[in-house]
Image 1 (tube, rainbow, N blue to C red):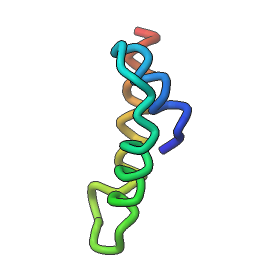
Image 2 (cartoon, rainbow, N blue to C red; image 1 turned 120 degrees about the horizontal axis):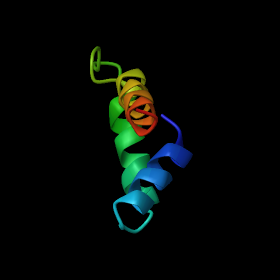
Image 3 (cartoon, rainbow, N blue to C red; image 1 turned 30 degrees about the vertical axis):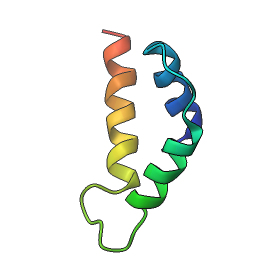
Length: 55
């Protein structure tokens, strides 16, 4: 998950950057017990959002 994608999402939603929230989310999703909802899962969600922009 890239911070730039998070920042773009927050901007599109008309929200503040919330970089602290991004950091907390990235840290939580990096925990060892995460096997499905990992940072890779979040990156995949952002890729799907990017795909949806071009359709």
